[in-house]
Image (cartoon, rainbow, N blue to C red; front, side, top):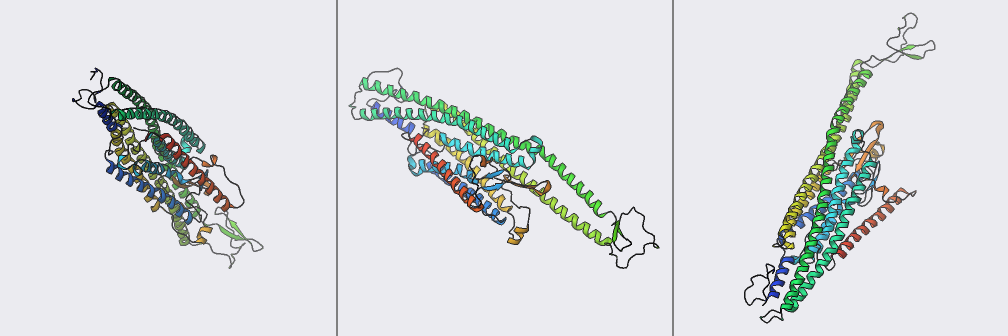
Length: 522
C-alpha cells in the first residue's frame, strides 16, 4: 500500500487489513445520513404539539371572527374578507407558518421515518417565517398607528403599506436569491456525493487485501471535490443566515418602534381623556346648573321664552295664565343631570377600556414576537458557531441540534396565538336580537391580540382594524356587482383559489429544488 502524507483523518493510520473503500463509505454515510436521525422521537413529539397548537389557534381565530361578525348582524366565512375603513383584509395569513410546518412534517418524518436526513430549517422555510413575522409585526403597528399614533408620528396607512411592501420585496428577494444559489450548490454537492458513493460501492467488493493505488487516488480526488463543494454550500448557508439575521433585527427594531408609539401616544391619550372630562363637566354645568328659562304670555296668548336677565313683566300688566306650563322642579333637574352624567361616565369608561385593551394586546404581540425572534436570532448565531465543527460533526447532527430549540420557539409562538385566541373570546360582543342589531348604529367589536381595535372618533365614526394586513384591495382585484352577497361570494371564491394556487406553487418550487437532493441542508 502506498503511503500518503495528506490523508484525511478517517483514512490515516488504518489498522492492517482494513478496506479503505469500506472505511470511506462508512465515514461519509455517518457524516451525511445519520441513522437514525438524532432525537427523532423527541422532535416528532415537539412537531406534533406545534402543529396542534398552530392549527387550533388558526381555526379558532377565524371562528372568533365569524362569531363576532354574526353577532354584529353580518355573515363571515373562513376565506371571506372582513370589511374595515381603509380596505378589506383576509385572515388566511395565519396558515402561512402552519403550511410550512405541515409540509416539513410530511417531507421529513411521515415519508422517511426515523431515517430522515433533514429538519425544518430548510432555506425556503425561513422565508415563510420571515413573512409571517413581518405580517404580524406590521399588523400590530398599523393597528395602533391607525388608533391614534398617526396624529403624532404621521404614520398614515399608505406609508405603512409602502413600508411593508418595500421591506417584504427587498428582503424576500435577497433571501430568494441566496436560496437559488444554495439550491444550485446543493445539487452540485449531491452529484459529487453520489459519484463518491458509487465509486466506493464499486471498489468495496473488488478489494482483496491489497489497495490499487490508482483507485485509491481517484477516491481521494472525489472526496476532496465533495469536501470543497461542501465548503461552498457552507458559505452560501452562512450568507443566507446573515440575511436572515438582518431581517430578524429589522423586525425587532419595528417592534421597538411600536413600543415607542405606545409611549408617545400614552400621554396624548391621557390628555384626551382629561379634556373629555373637562368638556363633559363644562357641558353638564352649562346645561343643568343655569336656571331654566321663564315664559311670558303675549297679547294673543302665545308663550315667549325669556332669558333670566330680561326684566320680568309686572303683575299688573301681564297676569300669569292659569294654564301656563310649570317648569321642572329642582329634584327633577338633579335627576336628569345625574342620569346624563352617568351615561357620559359609562361612555367614557367604555372608550378608556377599549384603549387599554388595545394597548395590552399590542404589548402582548410585541413582547411575544420580540422574545420569539430573539431566541431565533441566538439559535442562528449558535448555528454559525457550530459550522467550525463540520470536520467532526455531521450535517444531520447539526440540523438536529438546531431543530430542537428552533421548534421550541415555534411552540412558544403557537402558545402566544392561543393566548390571543383566549383574549378574543373574553372580549366577544354580547348576543343581540335582530331588532336591536337593526336599530343600533355603532358597531361593537372585540379586541384580538392588539390587531383588532375599534375607537369612536368625532362625528360618531368608528375605526375597525381586523388583522390589519396592509390594504390587500390594492393587490387583489375587486368585483363590482349590484348584488352584494354575490360580490362577496365571488371575491371569496376567487381569492381562495388564488391562495391555493400560491401554496401549490410554493410546494412545487420547494419539491423541485429538493429533487435528487433529499434535503437542502445536508
